[in-house]
Image (cartoon, rainbow, N blue to C red; front, top):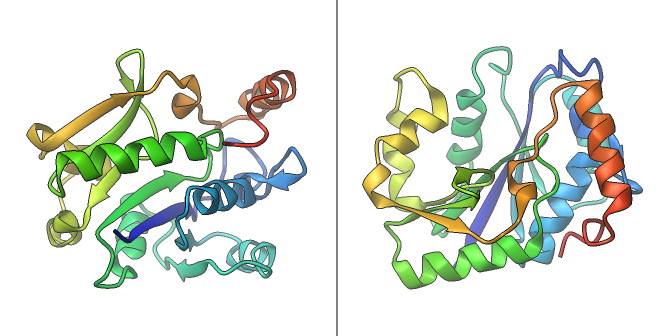
Amino acid sequence: MKISAIILAAGYSSRMGKLKALLPLGGETLLQRAVRIFQTAGITDIVVVTGYEHEKIQASLADTTVRIVFNPFFDREMFLSVKAGVASLDSKTEAFYVLPVDTPLQSAYILLQMNKIRAGAGPGIIVHPCYQGKRGHPPLIGAGYINALMQWNRPGGLKAFLHEYRDQQFDADLGDPYVLYDIDTPEEYLLLKEDFNSNPTIPAGE
């Protein structure tokens, strides 16, 4: 089963004041960490969607095998970056993850468990990582939804699109609170670093 990953790194990071994709964490950037964790889970087809500061992000990935897709409409809604990434997937992709770059503490273990859940439940199931009843990132979406996603033009972005198929979704609560973490402000980034440095299970991402 070929699973791909789409990492969204196109935004302005206006509330952070710095480019979130290139913020350091444990000797690597948030973007590099996201790429590494997908690779650790055995996912080799990784797409990074860029927009703002495209050249800087591209340069940071020069030593990797990821595919970079530029979204010229990055100054609009994030869902257009999702579409740009999805449009780049080839016909062999059977399912794909969508991960905003500012949710950097997922683990390869969680991804592997989600892969198993989807394999057991069937290709029509959309798998969400959850913690205490709350959905986090990244969802795992079957390729069968690609055409509908590319045609979707209603408000609400990816969340609204997925809600349309709520009867085909599985919430996988694997006991990991970090699927809910995201960072938008310098204060949240500081708390993230403090948590990262104090928790020895986070750095490996495994």
